[in-house]
Amino acid sequence: MMVSSMADLTVDLAALRHNYRELRGLAHPTTKFLAVVKADAYGHGLVPAARTLADAGADYLGVASLEEGLTLRQAKIAHPILLLMGILPQEGRAALAAGLEVAVYRLDVAQALEAAAAALGRTARLHLKVDTGMGRLGVLPQEVLPFLESFRGSPHVEFPGLISHLARADEEDKTYSEHQLQTFTEVLAAARARGWELPLSHLANSAATAELPATHLGMVRPGIMLYGSPPDAARPAPVSLRPVMSLVSQVVQLKRLPPGSPISYGGTYVTPDWCDLAVIPVGYCNGYSRLLSNRGEMLIQGRRAPIRGRVCMNLTMVEVTHIPGVAVGDAVVLLGSQGEDRLTGDDLAGWAQTISYEIYCALGSANPRRYVGV
Ligand SMILES: Cc1ncc(COP(=O)(O)O)c(C=O)c1O
Image (cartoon, rainbow, N blue to C red; front, side, top):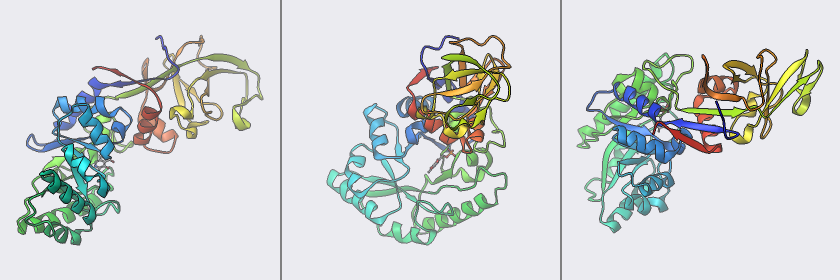
């Protein structure tokens, strides 16, 4: 394989489409589907990912910030878009002018949106966020009704639904998620009893979309499984997922070192024997975590090459003593498959003591992306 750049990061949009279809099949056809494309689509590129998912049939797109929402509108994506993390009061006008829906959890922000909607002659569509046990954004359950009631009769505000987020849906034991769901459905029922219809209420992330159908309600809201990884690295996803991101580099120098040679900063690895070492031009400035030092592996000629010494800013060294015939220019897979073997986001995450989400965000935002399967 010829690799023309030092860090060739590809995003396979056909795989993204495939994963969407697999996930879509897990929910009832009448349940709406919000594709989470926040944080630059977990590093996969906001606009290409959003366009692919919208074209594939997603009903809604979920982004993190006003800026991301506006970027999608500038890209002529007309789908409903929800700002999942809310906005600041002064951002209301811009959000409404772009037809963006907003998750709200602060009365002052909701009031600012109402005022902006009145000024623009529009209706603000607000998803009231409830903290059912995540301990993050959201009003507490007992605050939901007073919040809604303060907008009763407002011609400029409508609440399509309540929203919440599950803290432990990726775990095998679903007790905590069921407790969150119960809190959510109780609050929803109380609001409905007061005449708030809230048809588009939602709290199902990937894990809940896959394993907790009772949480699907009006809409599911998956992210990580669209990008090809299971929410819990320890358990395979119940549908076939295809990896979307891959990262390939090449050998830029080869050397044979005698026993006792220290490798990289701090000499944290010293060769116990003769060692064939390959230098790879990818480091932590490429989002390749320094925590992979002396722990991670790369693929060369379909075989595992272990990282020796510390990952540097632009370079990483791997041992290839056991791989015959390695040459300068050989393709090196850091994420993805080569020959019979594959390195997944979860493999890298395991070595770097994190989750696949962070691996994708870090690699995707630090390297130019090349799209295939368009
Ligand atoms: C509010 C919200 N909804 C949905 C998701 C999607 O979660 P996942 O990527 O685990 O499917 C996230 C991701 O962090 C989120 O913050």
